[in-house]
Length: 175
Image 1 (cartoon, helix red, strand yellow):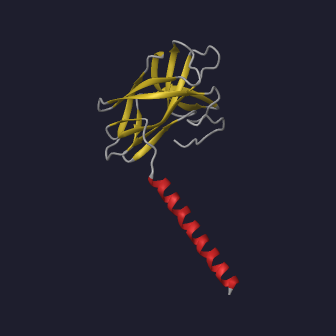
Image 2 (cartoon, rainbow, N blue to C red):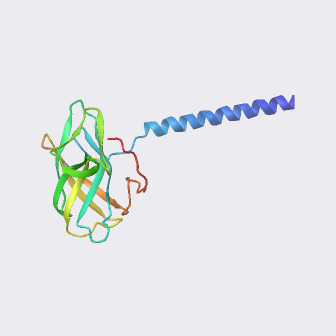
């Protein structure tokens, strides 16, 4: 009888533990990360830039653009006071060589998201006034196709960073 009570108590404790774990998991799914900035239905998540290597005169900024609206949107320009020129860029493959090219806009589909990440779309900072230093935060202003703008506080990660977390791996290359 004592063994049966012990097994029953252990089973109830296990069931309670599983229920608590499931509740915690569900709660974490419901709790969404707040955007760093938003303009209309477009939210900006996980903005970051890579620190300059030495005296590099150019840099890149990355982020996730999420459109919660029913209409497609596009980022048509970017600006920042850390560089002489700021452009929207992507990488294209020409033969066996990856090259950066300016783009007129970066589409953000209705109810979808577009990743700006190394090897893909990004904000190109050309003619930096000073090297970007790890720990620094600067603003980038994004302008949408409807004329709305958002100011995005952009933290600078390490020289070898490949993601907003600062990791050095290849990261998620989906775009």
